Length: 248
Image (cartoon, rainbow, N blue to C red; front, top):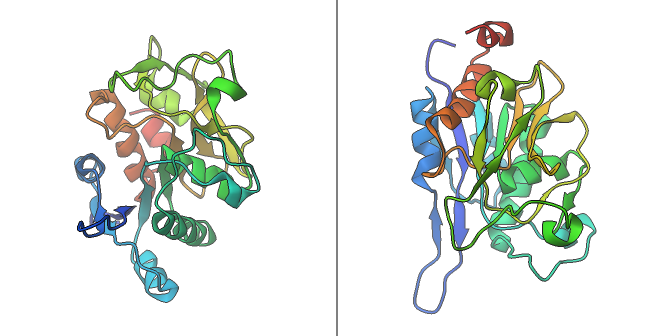
């Protein structure tokens, strides 16, 4: 691919409130990270016509599914925990439709935060709905008083995550209360918090680039090393052999 790849990103959404209009928007960190990594960021508006959305998706070379609030567990057959703070219904409808199209096309995909969780459930996995109850032994994964809260990361040898972070102490930002439980089909966990919570997933099919991080490498609290996650994703989108990236 001689030109920079077109990388789509789903927009966040806020419904109208009283006299305030509805908003479609995107945290600039996502677009900035894609651009720095060598891609052309394309923000996808939340549209309801599936044919129009399909046409947009067909134009893309890869997609980043961004973070946000929580998925509605009821839509996956689970009871809604009181701690769940759901995505706007319109955004969740859009995200689920978009993710299904991405998977049907085997389009390279990088899910972040709730984007990783949606990737997992769309492929048949499920989620812990509230870590303090589902995994009482877990370390704190969210501190409302500290937006720079971080915890350690343990990577799987031979994985893309190990290639990115290498050896030594690794710490990533953490701002979630839900997490991946059972993995979806074709996914493997490649990084965990020391308490066992899955923090990164990768696809097992070498012909379909699939990546997910529970942490946020686009966030202002991320390290310069975290940006390499985007660089590796863009490299995979353009078809650069994994072997070349692993020895770089």
